[in-house]
Structure formats: structure tokens, C-alpha cells
Amino acid sequence: MAEKSFGVKDLNIVQSSGAASGDPTIESNGDLNLKAGQVAIQTNTTITGVITATSFSGDGTGLTGVTASGTGIIIKDGGSTVGTAGTIDFGANLSVSAISGAAVTVTGAAGGTDGIQVQDEGTGLGTATTLNFVGDGVVASGGAATKTITIAGASTPQNLTLATLDVSGITTSGSFVTDLITANGTGRGFCTRYYITANGASSFSFAGPGQRNSVGNPTLYLMRGFSYMFENSTGGSHPFRIQFTGTTTGVGTYVSGSQTGIQIFTIPHDAPANYEYQCTVSGHESMKGSFIIPS
Image (tube, rainbow, N blue to C red; front, side, top):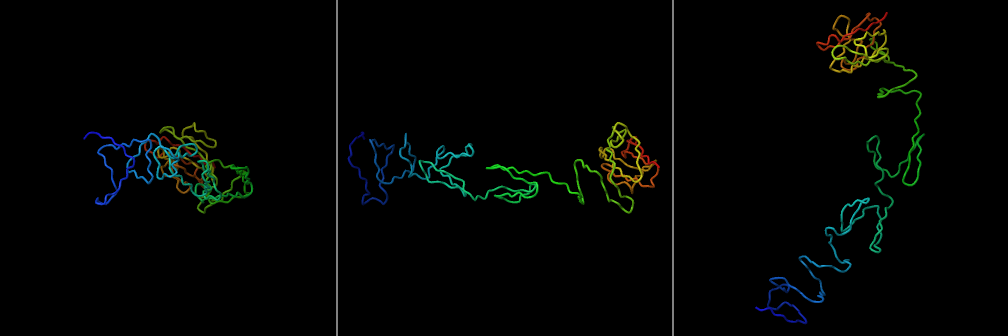
């Protein structure tokens, strides 16, 4: 059929009385082009496909559910972009003003529950909106959002009694007193400490009072009634045994601790004139020396 052109002043599509029920339909085997200065639709229009245009006009206030990629409101946190959203829901403790000139004002409200996380040496105690510092030597100063808490040096108690006190550094005092006394004679006072190293498998060296670690297998002089600490830094490489002279029998009652770690040797008042120390590893018999007990 040849192409025909015709003019229409008014096109009114109605449902015929004999047709099946349903909305009137205009069908085309190809594209349907409407060429006019303006196409006016005076009722609601439903589009099931995609509307494409070189531009759209209007303020879009009647549109809903429209949030295309790259459109909407850009959300930032401290200047860093979080994403784009069509709707922003401000949670509790925020006051949002009415729209004015396409802008709103968001104000933080009082009475928030976030507060400050309070911990005691890493253990959470809860959340607080107010911290009250009390006690002598505690001073809070500052203004606005910054506060400074100053804690003065604590006073030293005149007497301090503890069941156990572990000190990793140096303890300094005018005097020390001990009450570690036992009925079997193994009680000890404060110890003189020697730090033991090894020179290969040939000798032990000691560092401590009156002894530099430059001498191999030195002779040490120990006093009756005094306690001595021997810390073996070689561990299991050179177990350090305190023994009776001329034997491989260890001194039992007055020695406590580990031959591969720390041993405490308390010299009894009826001690013999000397003892020995020796490495217990086979082939290391030359790692041997003497303890002299003066009269």
C-alpha cells in the first residue's frame, strides 16, 4: 500500500460496543512517530518502558522513587564521599529544619546517648555523658570542647604491706626487712645476685658483687647464714648444679629453684669449708668451679 498522509483535527479513541473488554490500543509494526509542535496529554500517563529525551523541564516535585546512578544527593563524611542517595534519614538527636531555598539545616540536639566510652585498664565500664574527677591531686582545666586532666604525683605511704609485689625495674629503699623465716633452716633474707653466662662448653662466668664476667670458672666466697641467687642465662644448654665437693650429688635442703633458671642457695651455719658448681651436660665437665665458705 502506498504511503498516505492525512490531517486530523481531533482523534478520539473509544472502546467499540462489540469489542472484547479492555483498554483501546494503538498498535504499530514499527516506531510510532508523533510530529507536532506540542503533544498535550491531559490525564495520567503510564509508561512501561524508557522515556528518552534531550532534556526534561519542571521542578520534579511530583516524582517519586527516582534515584538514578550519579543523581540524587551526594553524601560526604568530613569531606570524603560516602555515596549518593535519593533519601536521607536523620536519626535521633538531630533536628532538621524545613526546606528553605532548596536547603535544610541539620542541628545536633542535646541529650544524646553516644557519650564517652569509659574503661578501666581496657575493661569497659559503660558509656557516660559526664565524667566527674575527684580526689586530691586531680585537677580538670580547659574550656570549650577540650579539657585537660592533671593528676599530681601520688604520695608515698609510710608503710606498705603486700602479699606479693612484682617489680620489673629497680626498687630503691633506705632499708629492706624480711620475715621469711622457716623452722627447717631454709628461710632466707635478701639475696646477693649473680648472673651466669657460658664461654662455649669450657667454663662459666659470673657477673655480680665483687665479680666481673671476664673470668672463667671463678672461685666465689660465700658467707654462712647468707642467701645467694644464681641466675643461669644459658638455660638448658648448661644446667648449673650446686654440689658437694668431689661428688656429683647436689646440695638439697638449702638450694631451691631450677638448674636451668634461677636457684637460691642459703649457706647453713654448719656448712663445710667449700662446695662446687658444675654443668651437668656430658662432655662439659670442665665447666666447674668452687664456692669457698670462710670460717
